[in-house]
Length: 146
Image 1: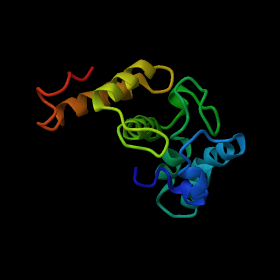
Image 2: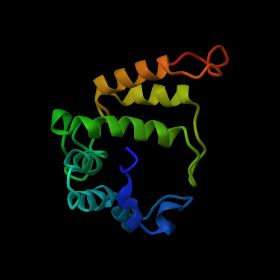
Image 3: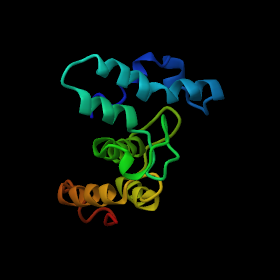
Image 4: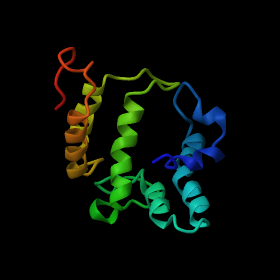
């Protein structure tokens, strides 16, 4: 998972850190990062499964993702797991273009997008693990996770 955005090393900081919406050209650059990361990893022995996860972590369960428009089980399981964990991290972390949302709200977004953006089975397992690993400071002070 640490390598999933390796390809962003070739995306200019002005694009990565832009506080507003990306232009079409900037979006095209950003959408290349899975392939760029996959290219780097393909040259390293023993990382074939990691390369596939990096390459496909922006595919969508419904086939509307990138870079290849894979859907459902065509997407490697590791990439489907990365998609969920990456989205949860993105939603719960401050970004240059928006503030973080609470984990409970992010969990609801995952549930809302299960079956379209995300593998519903992966979302279910992720939320089960999240409930089991919930830090004590969440308990009682926040609404329950879905």
